[in-house]
Length: 165
Image (tube, rainbow, N blue to C red; front, top):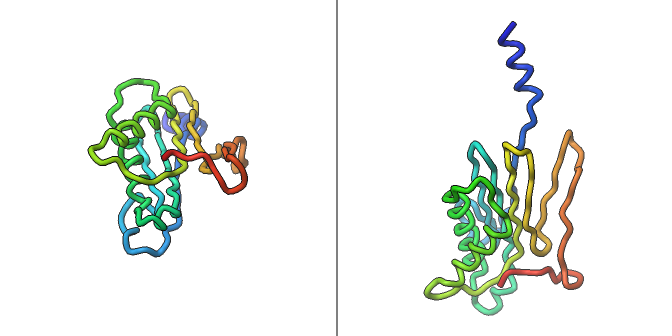
């Protein structure tokens, strides 16, 4: 009897789960984990929170002989490192993205490129979601198979999203 009550409590507990997906494009430099073409992402999970980030690189930089994937991968690697190393209970998605970008710009030879970005922090203890979304990247909250929230795109005008550069 005690075991079935425990299972019932586990069943009804609210769960916070995150996922990230991408579709790789065929290009020789696109092989490897956590990046798809000119895009990159990270997922950090621990007992207190899940942090997901995605950066959508601007492929137009290839016209100038610049590999746009280096910019997005560097940004997401910095975000992942910061998300893993933070010891605070509250992690601001805006602060995380800003610090990762600043660290990238302080490199000995700053990278050329640009991207849109989205960082989502899911606090498992508080059952809260907070996000930073720049450009036409985005996220949605799904409950019981229904979309209960979807982020808004940020664009200057059609097909010209805000970007980090």
